[in-house]
Image (cartoon, rainbow, N blue to C red):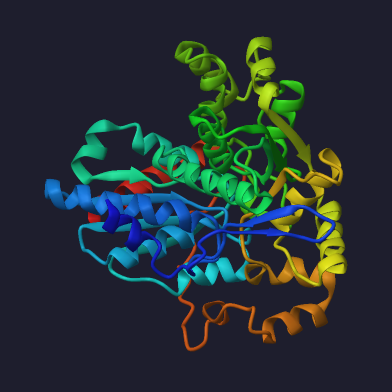
Length: 417
C-alpha cells in the first residue's frame, strides 16, 4: 500500500495540496498540482494503481470507461498510461465542443494501444446512460472486465476524503490550534468531491458546512435549496464546462446518507427523477441535507466577474470553476471568515477562453510566458489526432434512442478491442 501511494503521487510537487491564505481574503486549497493540473489526479491515480495491484493478483484485465466534461478524461488517461500495462485499457468519451482546447489536447494527443478517445454529440452527461446500462450488465462486465472510473465509483470519493483531512490539519497548524470547525466551498458537478467532504465529516473531520457552488446547470442548487430534484430539459453551455452536469451521480449517495440508509426510498426517488418526472425531495431528506449543505448558483457573468475581481485583488488568475466557488463564498460567507476554505480544483492553464474573456488577451499572454505556466500545457512537439465523430445524434432522434444506439456501439468496441 505504501508503494501504491508513493507511485500515485509521482509527478506532484513535494507539497501535494497547497493551502494558501490570501491577504484580507479566504484560504484557498490548491488541489491541482498533479500531472493533468486538476484535482482528479488525487483520486484517479490511487484508484488505477490499486486496480493494477488487484488485477495482477487475480490475473485479470480491465477496460475502464469514462465520460468526461473536461477533467476526468485527462486524469484517467494519464493514470492508465502511467501504469503502462496491456491488462488495463481506458475508453474515454467527451462532449464535442464542450471541453476546453487544453483538456481536449490532454486526451487526443495521448492515444496508444491501451487508450481510446471518442467525442460525442450532446450534453456533458448524455453518455452516462449508455455507460450505466453496460455497467449494470453483470455478465458483460464479468466477461470483458469492464468498470467505470467516474465518481460513482466509490474509490474516487473515498480517496478524496484524504485532502479534506489534510486541509483541516494544515489549517489547524497555520492557526496554531489543536482543533477548530471549518466550512468549505466547492465547485460542484457530479458531486464526487463534496461527497468526499461529507464522508470525511462522518469520519470525524469537524466540517460545519459544505457549500455546493454550481453554474447555470443548477439541479444541485434547486435540490438542496428547494427540494426540487428535477432534471433540466437541456444542458446549458457555460464557461465552467467541467461542472456542466444535469444529473450528479453522488447526490444519490448523499441522499442515502441523509435517509439513514433507506435504499428503497432512494431507489424510488431516482427512478422518478430518471423518468423525467417532477421530483420533489421528501421533507426529512431535505431537512437532513440542509443541516450540512449550503448551495449557490452562479451565472456566466458572475463567474467571469469573480475571475476579474480575484485578479484585481491578487494579480493571479483562477480557473472558472474556482471562480464559481469564489463567488459563492463571497455570497454565503462574507469576510472575515477565518475558518472558511475554498477548494481550487483546476489550474487556470487549461482555460484560455474563459481567462481571455474575463481578463483580456494581454493578461493571458503574460501568464503563458511566465514560469507559473506549466510546461506540459504548452504541448510543444505533440500531434493532435482527434477521432472522426461517430457517436452522433441524428436529426429529430429522441435522446433515449440515441443512447441505446451509442450503448450498442460501445459494447461492440469493447468486444473487438
